[in-house]
Structure formats: structure tokens, C-alpha cells
Image (cartoon, rainbow, N blue to C red):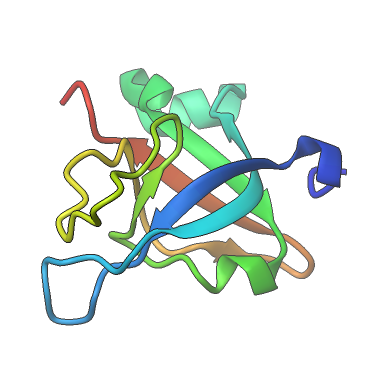
Length: 113
């Protein structure tokens, strides 16, 4: 249900380059993301639960995401690529959690810190 085409929205992923603080060019992605809002997530994340988004997808789609990658969710990436992705509004918080047919990716908000 969560991976239906009608629930998916566009955003951009910038993968972190190995052994560097720079990021690769933005990759357009089309997945379902939503704010954390369940009671369990509020208890786990504490007062900062509103700073997180979660992506529900298939394990194959989750292979692109690694801890520390940055995402442009509600903003567009700059046209000349910024290797530091200073304007990105979310960062991947931990590696994806994979189950049998579904993966969950947590994104933490960068602005407002």
C-alpha cells in the first residue's frame, strides 16, 4: 500500500563520496516520504520527532541510501552543483532498515539546528 505510485513524490538524493566531505550530483528519486507521527516513533525520538521524515520503499530502492547522504526534499537543488550540498534540507540518519519486503529510511531535518 505504501509503495503505490499515487503516494510517491519527487525529491533529490546526493550520495556522500567515500573518504570525503563532498557529495555527488543530485539523483532524482520518486518515493513515498511522510513525517514521523506514530506514538511509538514519538516515544523513540523524543521531543525532536517533528525533525524527522521516514521513507517506506522496497529493499531494492533503499540500496541507494547510506548514512550521511543528503536530500533535497522541500527545496530544489542549485543548478551549478554544490559539492557540499549546503542547501539540502534533510540528511539520511542511519542506514536503511530492511525487512522481508519493505525498507524504512529515516531522514533528519538540517535546518533549525
